[in-house]
Length: 224
Image (cartoon, rainbow, N blue to C red; front, side, top):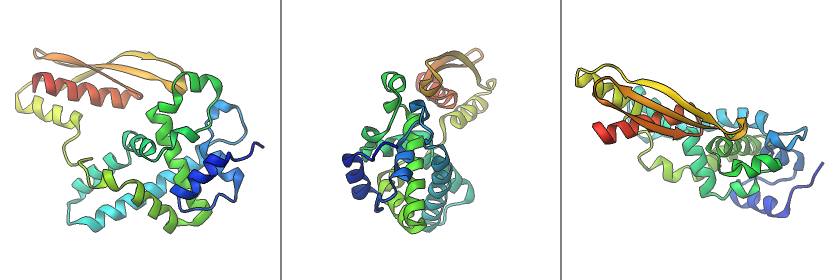
């Protein structure tokens, strides 16, 4: 089993509040399946996703008296792949991800999907190593900017576009997958959204959902 690099060990101690005594655990947290190694981050990602969701839900509940619908909207935005990837970049996580040679060459280190997954796996590792309180405290530190920003405060572009179409007595938006390129671990999607007799717009992203969201936002900018 490879050893935990000293720079990664230092990063863990500085950023998570946990001691990286279990090298196997932390190596798994940073390892993408493209390495071909036995351990990877998938199980820890599953666990970290739940810790993240509960921490953010509790934090939102403490903030104010928002309705359930508003809380759900903000929660979905704050735990999204896009937000997780932004957080990963802000704490310098990409440099420590362990990728296979091809995945690295394909830009996997900057993929929102991979960054989001590894963020959750590190949360999961912190939970296993130190328990919920430490993992939750880490999430609150990492998510300070996102929590006090505008994530989830405005309508999701796809919902906003549906409301725009209904309000203007137009047909509902239709989404079409134009292109899917790249390998599975670094896929890129191009989607076109069309409203009959109004126009269309193109959106791109690391997932079909993100491409649809970007297409809706682009349509509103052009025609809204």
